Length: 394
Image (tube, rainbow, N blue to C red; front, side, top):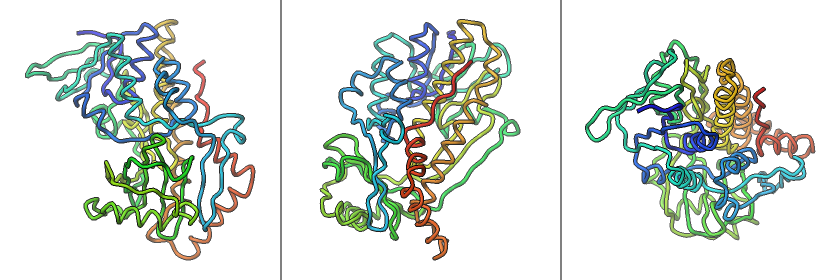
């Protein structure tokens, strides 16, 4: 079998890249080691930057998002018993974010790919890229007891942090930057109305909390817990009590509780590899970088990688601009590191660290007060939150 672009991974980044390339007349095959049901079962992010919303519209998969997604023109920071509104639209010239779950984005992209008749091979075992440094790379994989080969022009590694794409690059060819945080997020999904119309990020002496949502009737809440915490130690009642304790009274008394339909603990880390390409294989999204979820950047950063790679490949095939291939990593990393900085900053000012002393705690509180008390500070938060512009491919 042969294609122009082989994509490893049928998560949202691989599917979005595949849809954009398909619409541009560039043939793709997606290879995924999991089943479609498993992929759709992942509970992930739900805040889409303006740039990702625009990219989904460009891909033609926006009908359900525009009908069901919740447009948010701001969010709140809660600390010291206060609630401060960050007015995204006013501070960024009209930009906003969209609340629409990653599961739903994936579902829409899967449906679009199936409707287009594009090829996706699920439940593929032992996927391996070969010949990345040659002009004719290929993938091998096993399916139904048989070994198959997929020849291609380029490979896109969209298979996540634990995927095979990055692991297939010689270790000496990559420089790794990493910070692991000493806490995680305990999150629950519940069919309850949101406590606020917008997201609330709370800094409290007991630890960070986040009030988020998936729809007007489904909520996603988080509390900071130690890195070694066990999810089975948290009953629903214990979670709700802890969340209430970390929220301002005006929110806590209006919190509607209910049975959780999903509960998990996510570790927090910052991670980047450089470069994001190896010959004709390009790393996209979590395969190349991880951010703490505090800044809502993970899925959105993958989308900006997709946009960059799509624009480059389109120019390569339409205009013969093969020299652009060497710019992919540099262009992506400029935006990656800015998103890493914002996510690190949000994590640093909103969480309680085990080694925080009284001096550090006062500095954290002062940092929050300084930024929210200054229009320039609020604008800095807002422009990063809605997403920095995608870099044009010239």
